[in-house]
Image (cartoon, rainbow, N blue to C red; front, side):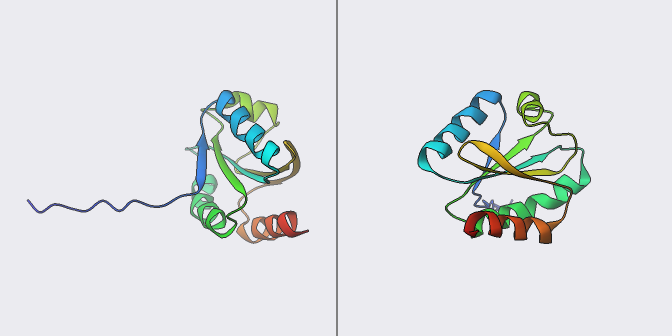
Length: 120
């Protein structure tokens, strides 16, 4: 049998699976003055899955921003705390608090909002 090489995809998106890890990442970003962009998704949600590769691309583009991914079924407490009602929802945060929410799979609008959020 021929050995196959595994392709390891480099990612800057951190998966959050608990309220404890959420608190840790958000607190650290706040202390460092780092903006945070969060993708709230669900494995069963087709639009969420469709947005994931685009979210990965944005994370590679904005290196000084923390990109988090939260599956609402795995981290229910986090989704509840931020009042996430639909997927996908993207939350832009500064100073440990949400500044803007974008609901739905709209890559153009997400890109525009992040750019304005970071440089505006």
